[in-house]
Image 1: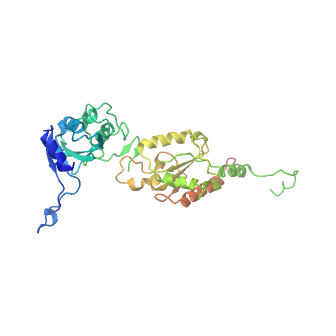
Image 2: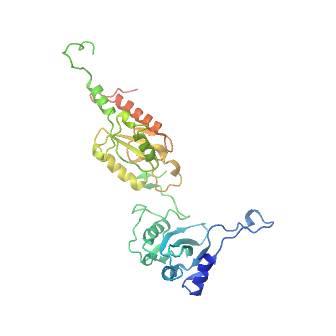
Image 3: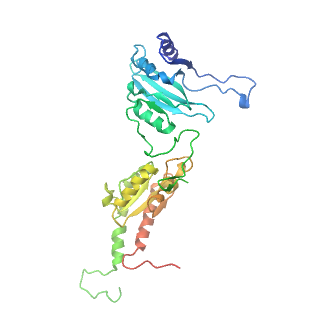
Length: 176
Length: 166
C-alpha cells in the first residue's frame, strides 16, 4: 500500500492516537519572497500521533493484518528550533511482508518530556530510546534498562537540545 | 673509538652504550594495535605491503599494551575513550612513545567547536612525542612522523644527562 492507503486503513480501523497526516508539497508560487515565502515541504509523508498513546498505535501497526509493520527502523527526536515549544519524535516502520513503510511523528512538549516506552512492542526501540533519553532528556516510562548508551554515566546536560550549554571541563580536562 | 680500535681480537665491536641502546630501540618500535577512527584506516595502509612500516622495524603491531613501545593515537578521542587511552598508556612499559596522528588527536579537528564530548587533543591525557597533521594524514606523513620519532630516540641518552641548552 502507498501512504494514502495506509492512512485510510488507519482511519478506518480507528487506531488510537492518530491525529492526522502530513504530505510533502511544493512551494506555493506567488509574489511573496524573503521571509514570507512559503518554502513548501520536502521529505516523506508522515502520520501525526499522540505521543502518550504511541504504544497502542504501534501495537495496531504491528499486528493489524493489512499493515504488518514488523520492523522498527528508527526512533529518534529532533529539536528544530529553540522557540519551538515541542520536540519532534520521529519513527520509521517497515513491513517486509507487505513491502511498505510508514513514517510517524509525534510532538512532545518541552515542558513535559515524558512518554511511554515502545519497547513492549518493538524491542529494537531499547537502544534508540536510551539515546533519545540522554541526548534530549526524554523520560521513557517503562523502559527496561534506562542507562546512558553513548555518553559517560556522569554526563551533565542534554547535548542535542537547542538550549544546551557546553561544558567547561570534564573530570579536570578543559573542554576549550 | 680511536685508541680502542684494533686492541681486541676479531669479532669484537666497541661502541657506546647509548648508541647501542638507541640503535636497538629505534629500529624495533612496536606499536600497539589501536585505532579509533578513519586515521586507523590510513595506519592499516601504512602497515600493509605498499607503504610497509616494517621497513622501519615498526611493523609488529602488538595486541597488548604490555608488549608495545609506541601508541599511535589514530582518530578522535572523546572523554569516555580518553580515560581508556590513559589506562592503556599507563600499562605500557617504559620507554614509551606516543604519536598523535591526524587533526582530531592533535587538537580536536573538525569537532573542535561543536564536539561536546571530544577531547581537544590527546595531549590532554597522555604526553605526545610527535604530532602529525592531516585529516587523515597520508601514509607517507605517518612514516615521516615515525622517522621523526626515531630521530628523537637517537638523541636520547640513558647514561648521561641530556645537554642543557641555555
